[in-house]
Image (cartoon, rainbow, N blue to C red; front, top):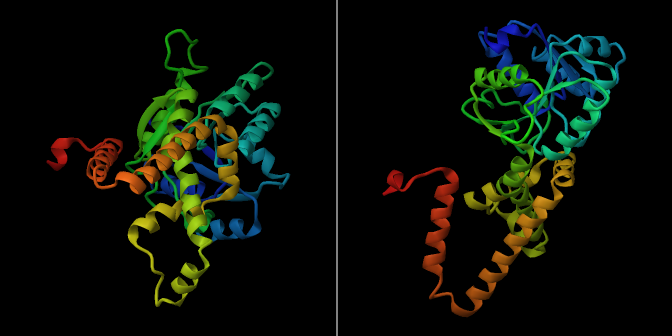
Length: 312
């Protein structure tokens, strides 16, 4: 039986863009016949989700009556910033929740360490997930109908032979199939590898995006002239580069706090390259540019997963 068919009740704790997009994806799935409980912080979000029929029952997170619904769920999917997720998992452990828990967090090592500490005192069924999708927008009204289709989901799994087996292989398989049935491709990583890779591919680039927006936004004459134009003087390249500067500050505070060492290393490497490029443009630009830009293009293609045969 498919994973979605086995779920009688699912609680989505945190129905922002990703949580609400997930609820929509479940509604559209032929395999899912269960009940969706949603949990949000504000009355405005609660009203909007109910109006759009994206949950069967929706609760404000502080409502006491919501506890019985939450703890009766087969699966709890957490859609919170990572530090809030850690505290919520501690709460579920204290309440002796017996069902399965997964999340959508962008950092893994700190959470993994906390899970290990919880397991010394309580039994808990947790499999970490990181769907590689989303948007700079936040809130249920920004949900995306096909957010999860043909995207990558990283499942946190111990890969090394000298490590003990995962807590429950059946739970790992269940969560993997859960995301597959929603249209995602699955990759497996241990938590340390995940955080190292994401510091370069996601976390440091977010900070660079915000730096660009900050540096440009401080140019008063530029901004004045930009505001006088019929539409903003904004090329597609810059628009793409500063798009994620509009992301949720709390979510990114948690990401940086829990992956600080990797992010600092990545930023220092970017800083060195920027200093090198600045010095080179000042002194011997003509001899250097074509080779450097062609190399950058090759690196970009490798990161994109484009082989030479695709463009030659």
